[in-house]
Length: 131
Image (cartoon, rainbow, N blue to C red; front, side):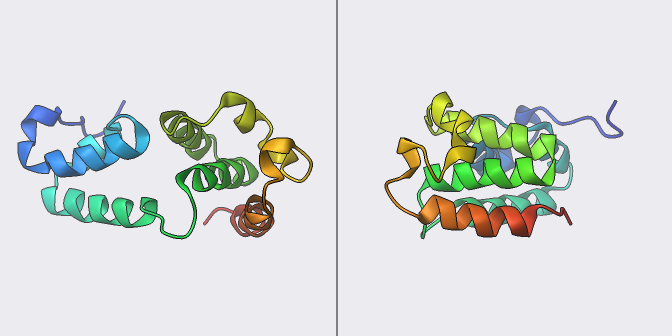
C-alpha cells in the first residue's frame, strides 16, 4: 500500500500537460506521476526532465526503446524492464524484435547498421550496475 495515494487526474487539471507527456511516452499515466502531482512544482519539473530525456534527436524512438530494454535487463531492474517493454509496445515495435534484441549482432532485424550493436555494448556495460 502506498504511503500517499495517487490523485485522480481530474484532481490536478493544471498538470494535464505533465500527464499527457507521460501518456505519450508510456501509453498511460503511472501512479508515480499521479502521486507526485500532490506537489505541482515537482510534477512540472519531473515532466520537463522526462520530456527532455525521452525526446531524442540522435537516435530513433525504436532504437532508444531497444537500448532501454537491454540496459534495464542487464541491470536486473524488472521495474524499468516492464516500462521499456510497455514503451516499445506503444511505439509499435514488433514482439519478435524485442525477443531477438540480444541477438543484435546476427539477426536480420539488426544487421542494417551498427548503431544498436555499438549502443548496446556501451549502454549495457555502463548501465549493468544501477546507481
